[in-house]
Length: 347
Image (cartoon, rainbow, N blue to C red; front, side):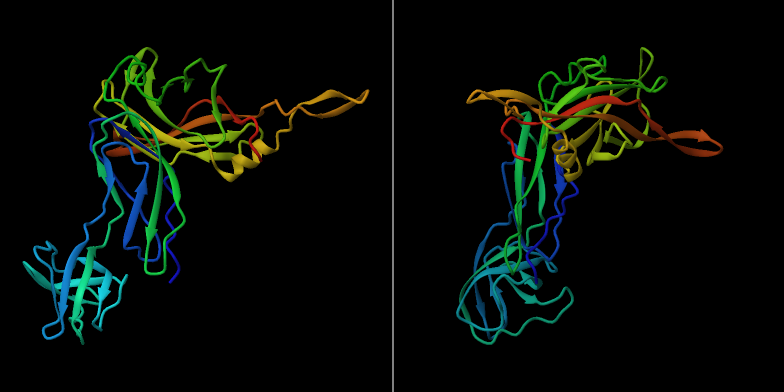
């Protein structure tokens, strides 16, 4: 069995101070333990407690005081002393449980495993679900490292970002909502499809390669606030030429705790396609005097920049159309986004 591979679909997640948060991580190869570093304050990953036990051969009972397990729960032994019949770091299933004991099976409906020789001691844990839960208590952006472990070993660390928005609500296009955190307010006019971004559409938005961002998306019709019913909302970052997609948002959710309601999308500017596009932009040649000769080389103090376009797409559900709801696809106008490679950063 190979070590686990963590699903990388989610690279940026959004949360809000004071609002319960839940995210389910997934991995291949049946991991039984998950570990996360760098989580925002108030969030934690499911890490079942280790319990001490002994295992008796005469009745195949795992003796474990007030274990709290239910029949069918998945458990594993991280340590076993003496005895035969069981293996460490192997997933088993609880059966015939009592308050202070249980038997184990190799499958959910399997027979109890025969313990040939007593185990003088054992350490048992319930299999971790990999679920991150809690209620954030502070706004900010956290870079989280996630690892999954199975009988073979531990996965490579998967890095992703959780951005926590402040608890304060707001109105008037979202300016107040975003003052206390790093989210970016964006307004889309459903009539003109014009996107209004901080700094104005001509100036656009600026990110470094590898940055992540969470957008608070508001909809209007002229000067009036509009709250459409959306089945999906996606932000795509595209190449100016040919509109090849270089990055796509990976999370979408409705925020109903603010007035007016708005939607959030999260995106990471870290795809290989985007990296290649940034690296294709050459530096600026400047003449440099050396030993009386002019030598043309790339100025190391010039930032490599790539200019692309952002576009929002959404799926709106409109009721009462032809006897049933209609699914209407919409797209915004383009707006400029610049991605740079930082000074001194290698390609």
